[in-house]
Length: 108
Image (tube, rainbow, N blue to C red; front, side, top):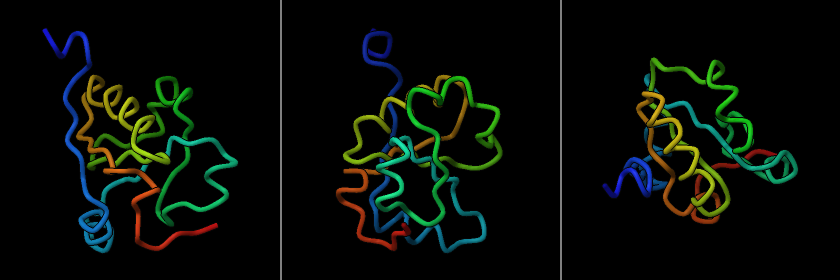
């Protein structure tokens, strides 16, 4: 019942764990769902930008053969995106605290 109201439960990943996994051969696909202006101010170097409002119609651009980590500024928008992806059958986690908690490398 709660899943129907709140959407599917999505696990989180801490920034340190994501930074470690990005160095591995089987690194996750990082999906940044912020707006282009936010993205250009700094993003995880491996991140791919698809703003939240476009995620559902651009699923064909997101690989299904590897884990996905969603990212935004605080974790709210990326949580919504993660729920959409989980409903669509993706293996997805949300970055805890978003970019506001990310302590790894950033690119502008």
